[in-house]
Amino acid sequence: MVDPKVFAEGISIIGNKIIQLTWVQKIGYVYDKDTFKLLNTFTNNVGAEGWGLCFDGNKLYMDDSTNRIWFLDKDTYRATGYIDVYDDKGPVNQINELEYIDGKLYANVWQTNNIIVIDPKTGTVLQKVDMSGLLPDSQRPANFDENNDVLNGIAWDAQGKRLFVTGKKWPHLYQVKFLKK
Image (cartoon, rainbow, N blue to C red; front, side, top):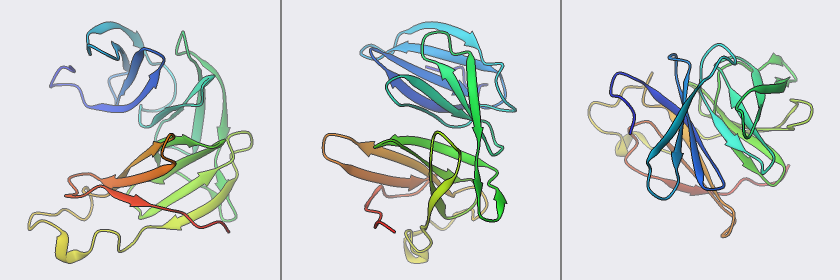
């Protein structure tokens, strides 16, 4: 699908299309959801880099390695606004994978074991979940890289109301449930 010279990043589905970002190349790809045929590309001139992407049914949310989450038009992929993400200690930088679940944004924080739940209107961190210990040392491959093979995947099964997480080069996908605060 993507040129091997390009580092593909965030991906989201909008109707019958798959939208995909690239990390630093500033290119976005649009594919047919059923055939994976490339329909077109677009210039992603929003933010520092292309990291996570998700869709709430009306707009796309995109993060860029900072504490900023951009709002993108679902048809033109152009910025329409943004929020900055803060917790009680200040800005939360390196927001990475994004998922929209029941009116909130879920994101992992790059190179940490944390998943945060964000109010998409204000950028306020509503909850922080420490996923340390999810992948025990005994299940890590011999060549496991602590700095790169980190928590990095969040997927929501809306029909089954199930949340899944994983990481780069992790051998398992985990179904998890966050308890209400």
